[in-house]
Length: 105
Image 1: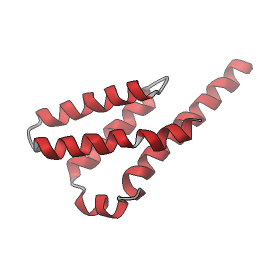
Image 2 (image 1 turned 90 degrees about the vertical axis):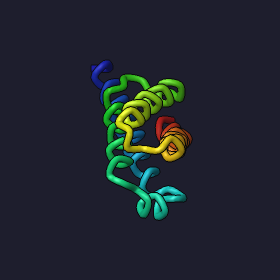
Image 3 (image 1 turned 135 degrees about the horizontal axis):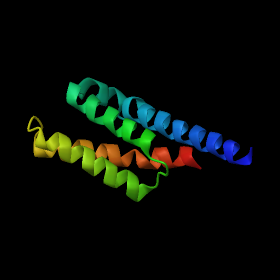
Image 4 (image 1 turned 120 degrees about the vertical axis):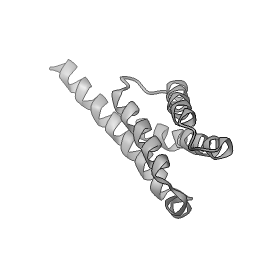
């Protein structure tokens, strides 16, 4: 029973972190600006980051950053994104860690 409780708590924490990331991406300090500038690919990339977070059993800063880099490489290879724009978006997604980590505590 205790094992099941720990899994439920872990799942709740993970969902809170995912919700925090989604909220930050669209409603943070630059939320209005982000919504105005967002193109379809940026939403897809952020969505993929959120999906990868769901699959992670444990989330810490290093794992989160590595996962964001992997997703960014995939989108950079697609060739529809300028290097500067990809660098900016990757930095923005990584900066979400500060907000996400607060939800994990």
